[in-house]
Amino acid sequence: MARSARAQEEIRRFLDIGAVQVAELDLDGDEGVLRPGPGSPPVTHGEVFVLVRRGGRPVGTLLGRVPEGADPKAVLAARAGAECAAAQAGEPGEFGEPPYASVVVATRERAGQLARALDSLLAQDHPRFEIVVVDNAPVTSETRELIERKYAERVRYVCEPVPGLAAAHNAGLDAVRAGVVAFTDDDVVADPRWLAELTAPFAADAGLGCSTGLILPARLTTPAQVLLESHGGFAKGFTPRTYDPAHPPGDEPLFPFTAGRFGSGANMAFRTAVLRSVGGFDPATGAGTAARGGDDLYGFVRVLAQGHRLRYTPHALVWHHHRETWRDLETQAYGYGAGLTAYLTAVLVNRPALLPAFLARLPRGLAHARALTAVRETEGAGGAGTPGDHDVRTHPWPRRLSRLQRRGMLYGPVGYLKARRALRAPVREKTARGAR
Figure 1 (cartoon, rainbow, N blue to C red):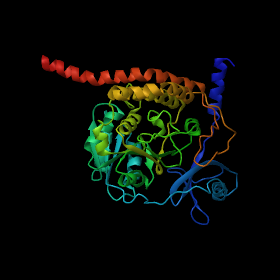
Figure 2: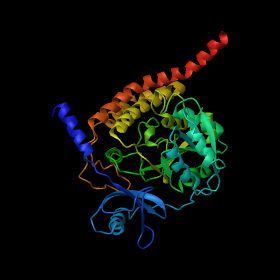
Figure 3: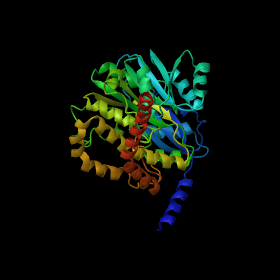
Figure 4: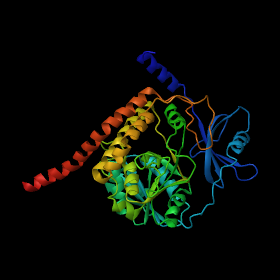
């Protein structure tokens, strides 16, 4: 098939992707409880993406279809009971009392989304926490005015003039008071137990430096949102796992450099002293810089490289509002590729002692990169796979997005170096003015 014809076919397939409802189903009790996802209307007939819970804790997802005229709860409960029967949630509070925690939310000119996120954070089932909003390189006073008008006594406002997500996170890190600091984004809705589940492991493990949690889609209303989630989205599964640098995982030959497997920046927490001891995040990484991303991955690897453990827990859940358009997906694919190699460059620049380990893993790393950016075809016509494995590829991943991700990977080191130069430029100008 000629390239133009193939591109047209990819566009046609993309536009044919239909909306999917989002719902939650708690299996506890005789009948279970079915609720729409956050901000979604009640479930009706059609395709439904379902988070399955036991005792309120996430245990899996499934993709089901409700026939017209059927009872959505009965159909989905039967499906979940068959597929998630063996799934165990564990006991809430298994790590004891969660520690005093700070939550940092970086934002830029998105007051409407920020208010939705803050409302969910202020409803957290956590005994003691604070919230810090970092307004990154603002061009209006909208965010500051929102905090002063609606959240003044419950949320602290910090302004960071240097653009970039890592710079904003570092400003939050400087401002927090608690021994554990959690980070999330302004485009999420946090589950009421999110902060308690994400921070409780720190109380039980003195060697824990970082924890990450589960990210699921808040809406699947556009083709772009459905396509992204069909290929895994941001979720890392429903099996809790601890990564220990003293005992590298046998099934992770690239450890710790495949940091994307550990979690994502919309749902992460660090022991504050540990993150400060490694210098926080590299300000030349992250969205808003020429590097395009990678600040969260940089943080994971630096903490692991210091000998601290990282814990992934699916019980700490946030609902993420995925980007909505094809253009958004193009930007995201390129940014993911760039952020991946930019963070690796940042790690090696800031921690040269890791170079031998990186070079030893490089051949497998190149193979991993090729697989990561391969054109991914469908895997069946719509089955849901195993519980927690919603990466069923019911829609093919377009070649253009794979090419953009590869181009981003080639650009990443250049972008990181550009970002470093941009950070040094104001310092040089200030020095030159002083010399005059």
